Image (cartoon, rainbow, N blue to C red; front, side, top):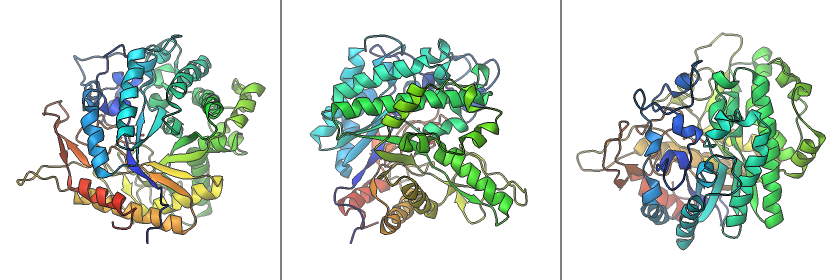
Length: 479
Ligand code: BG6
């Protein structure tokens, strides 16, 4: 018997800047993602002291500009999602399609019309849209003119934007998320906060101020949504990396507790409980910051209290290890969030440590902490796929990864966790966020395109396509 609810939300997830392409069409303004060079060195490049937030086609490639041209091919893509039996499709709205500069008073109607069509196409097949309001694609002007999220003016701009999109689609879209992986700024504040070394990322005070502004903005969006319809479900979205201590040394245990609080819990605690957690002071002190250094008003705190989220959305790809005593301090490489190597786990080709049990632990930790429904809105294996002599893409390694993670979800449900749904990442191949590569693929659907932009962009079903279709059909019973 399936452990999952009858109406479990099976589906897939994407983000506008990673699949739409059409980066300057129909009035779209540039977003922060449009100036990120392709390739594994993208974060290094943007953190050079002279980084200018400009497109430099002479030096770099920008795979996101064309991406997989979902902007023109969305009907074909959604038809394939429907064939797999998706109940939901998580995608993001590109803020810079709606407000090209971010600070205008009137939205760009052409941008809104594009998402009208995407939403209607989903609904035609009975697929419920799940919208991320901001997924690593803030308008570039908000970075160059205002300095990114550390500026309080952004609260107002985000409020205007979320007001427009919520009003436009609240009758058609029940599930929303305010910010993708809001906690990711601890490690790479460029994508969610618009901060790099040259404009303030090195001073952690700016990151904390930016978070605070985002907490207020998120709370206002939740409030707007609930005033439109109290049944709207508006969630947080946390990048969760289950974290273990390397050993029983109390020093490592304590450091691991701190890592968990600061990375995995801090943002969710504010967004879900409506107040800063007790350990905030200690967390900030580590970086020489005091709460009183920040611009936080009573009204802000009131709004944060009033705008708590309905559910906890999170991404889960890997676990990490804390080792401050240095007994076993070989660092895991290639992943977003660092940590040491776990000798019990294998890693993906990009160094992400694969840990299905870590997902069961994450689900239990999050549910114990918040007692709110959980939604796994990203999970998956980034891997290189090849078309074999028979013309097939046999991604058995991806099936294996997903199978084990869905089993872990089922076990967590048995543990008593309230799990709403599961939308594996990059259900169709798209451009990687951390490395800007096409060759790091997650999809059930293969897109014929390489890292240099060569290929037909035709879509092909991988072996995992029919496998996942059957998982959905049997509500997770047959893996
Ligand atoms: C999450 C992001 O961090 O992980 C996605 O929300 C991203 O935007 C995904 O694509 C996978 O990471 P990557 O770097 O392999 O694309």
